[in-house]
Length: 181
Image 1 (cartoon, rainbow, N blue to C red):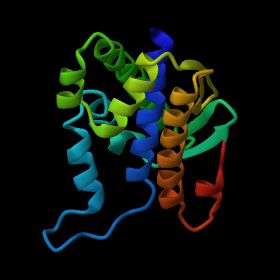
Image 2: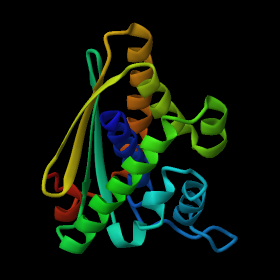
Image 3: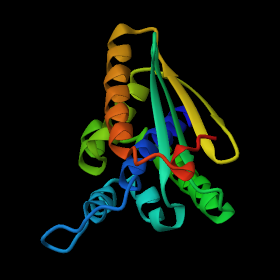
Image 4: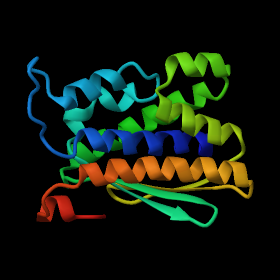
């Protein structure tokens, strides 16, 4: 159960990394796309645990790799500031606890209280996906696999979503944004 919730946490961070990739221009209404994303994340029972602390965490990086039976996803805090790393780790823990709660929900409740991405993660976990997780000084790594071809296809879809988010996060190469822990 804890491994499945850690899966939820890690994939949530993928979505959050998109928000912090680059400063976004303001729209005609005066709100940046990042503010809109944060507002949407605050509506998700799991995502809100990161969205509420995005200013403390700062930019995040991510990478998603398709495996023969699943996906590997890595997220990291771009900054080496210990306060930002601590905020990132605390947000991960809060998401993990929230994710654990969602595993006992009905599918209808999950649909009502989770974003589509978190619903997909929960669905893969409920279908028996196996997750392995590890951490570094400022990153989290998870590998999600399954021997079931249907779940593998679901994981492939999640990897493609992560890959698109990662591509949109890429900023001009600099020492700060090019770092990977």
